[in-house]
Length: 317
Ligand code: PEP
Ligand code: MG
Image (cartoon, rainbow, N blue to C red):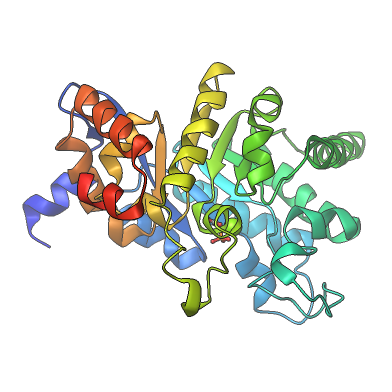
């Protein structure tokens, strides 16, 4: 990386007419945090907290989770750090938590569903997050795989219960801003209602794509369907963006598509406020932001949202 390229990566990303887009990093380990800062991340749009759970035989203790969350959040100073609660199941099995034996794990008990069925494990994580938030006001949390309002309400109810219990015990705790992942088609359909109850949306396009297209994200035989640039997926993203903005909340994307500079202008044009990606994509996406202009981005978005085929979308980009 040349000195100039590195300097540009560290600067924030604005379109030619001065509109800022937040370019964040996805993290799956403590080491990723330093990497992300070196690559110019303006915050963290997704901490995959699973990494703390995958490497051990049992769930990590509240104290060790607290230390990890606080450490990651502190590394970013006052930049936002969004920690996703445990997202196990589907392609991320975990022996000590899952019952196993599901015919369709991707349609089964995964993500928030699994946490709501293992409340004791979930509460340990929520306590750790509430305590870390007391130290780091930049820490936010989000729930994965939300499908219904009831699930969101249950998760918030548990979080509130943990918060009150910590306060009663005199343990420092603070309530973070709460967001949800939009990665189940039902959440898109329910987006207007859900948006009233959270501070932000983050679209998980990896899962949203497989669920919208009914095509396993790991199955080569249907990989031609598994593209977040499919017109059907783009329209779902746009629908979620409209619902978010109607409710006055922000919307980001933390699936792989966020790191594809070919898509940046179209996503800006749809009203996406934040893109979160692997650190090594940040420089290229920031360049793509700087190369575009709001009106032009809106036009591009309008065109791709009217496209009939993936091929048409790709040729428009
Ligand atoms: C997604 O589904 O797009 C996402 C970001 O989450 P994960 O890839 O961890 O399922
Ligand atoms: Mg996902």
